[in-house]
Length: 61
Image (tube, rainbow, N blue to C red; front, side, top):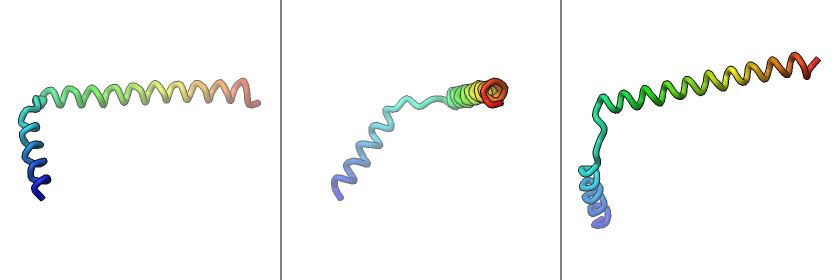
């Protein structure tokens, strides 16, 4: 039980040292991640559509 309490105390001390992002930074970085994810999804969707078109047109007759 003593080890658990020591761990919790040390964890709290370390968490106080963390440089937490501001609200605006969090919103900016979250928007960036969502935007990049959507961009990659669109890119992969276009590639998938293109490869499917090529296969249906030239390979599978």
